[in-house]
Image (cartoon, rainbow over all chains, first blue to last red; front, side, top):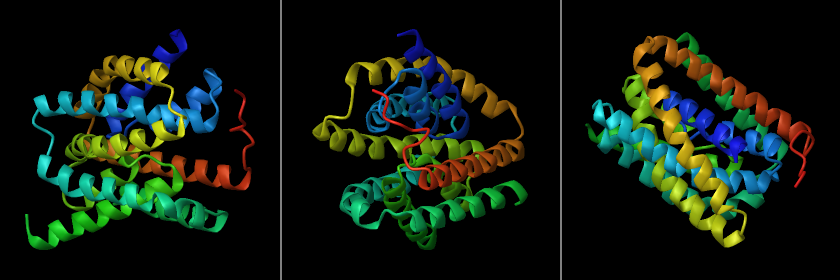
Length: 115
Length: 131
């Protein structure tokens, strides 16, 4: 219980600071501290992320930082694509594709750092 | 908002949805740079990304409950206790310089990329099923 609360607190700070759900923190912490399987940790983190994101949106909305139109334009197609693309997962996943995606993330990361 | 911006936002959003599903990364990792590319400030992008995450997480939860992987009570404990941390995260985000926050996010992307490479080159090791 105390460990789950610690995971939640960490994820809350991290998620709100960067605007991510906190899954990148929750999944490894659930595996390492609470001994969840990776699959359980990933699924369970989704539930927690929904709550973290709602709390974060509320905190930022009070300060007028949330752009609702942009959130809908990006979030709704993403949810639809995630739903439709679920079947792709098994057919497409492989080390080469993962490395290509990692390379894409590195490019975006470098762009944000130097840009 | 111009038509060009709208079409770009929809295309990038759909791509983010597919990629996050494929590689098991959260949508926010891709939403934030997408929103920055569309012209939002770093704090605005973080705030807006959190709202965009909600429908994606909801779809994910709905799918995972059918597979039986979601453990409801731990999810609620982690989620509810995260609310206490959220305010701290927001305070840091609005206080530090936006260009610093942007660079930190860039570093975060490099860490995620390294984690993906680690996972693909060492399947299951370090992420072993210990339950």
